[in-house]
Length: 214
Image (tube, rainbow, N blue to C red; front, side):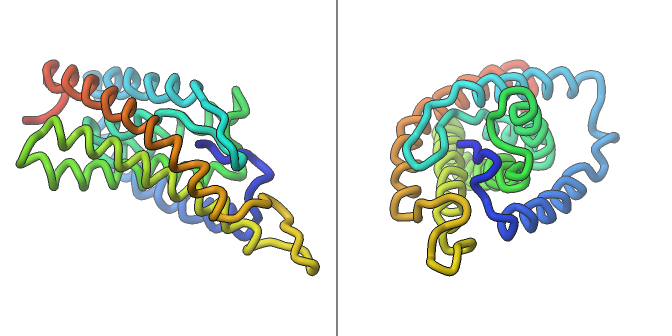
């Protein structure tokens, strides 16, 4: 699902970097007081899981790729702010070491996958947990992945409208949302089932070990 370099216009990625920088500053506020000898290894373990999942990519039509994220369980265990920072680090390392995603696109990728996904996951979990906690975790993971995928698809699909030559030829990504949305979302419906199952499995382990407050 990573957007690589060269696919986004400066009109897209420059503002995204600005918004992401403000979000990183917000997420990092008070971080030193939260990190201790018990939280750091737990966070590192689940971040490593998210890192590994992000490298198992399924090429998709429309210029992107699909994979499970692992960011929902980060958000459910550690909260939105830590999940956002941790997954932003995952995206940065994947871009630098493996070319998965891009540096110019990091702001968009971080906001879509690392921030919006966790916000949706936590909001859905809190809304549904009163009825059934396991269902709440699974639904939160599934829907958060679809929302992130939709944002990526729309950002890509809007590029021909945002930046084009005088003759109408797109300067960057050439396909519109009528192609990118189904091309990205349909495979992620299946990927989301695996994401939900994995998130629920890891969540149960974390709950059993006392990592999650009752």
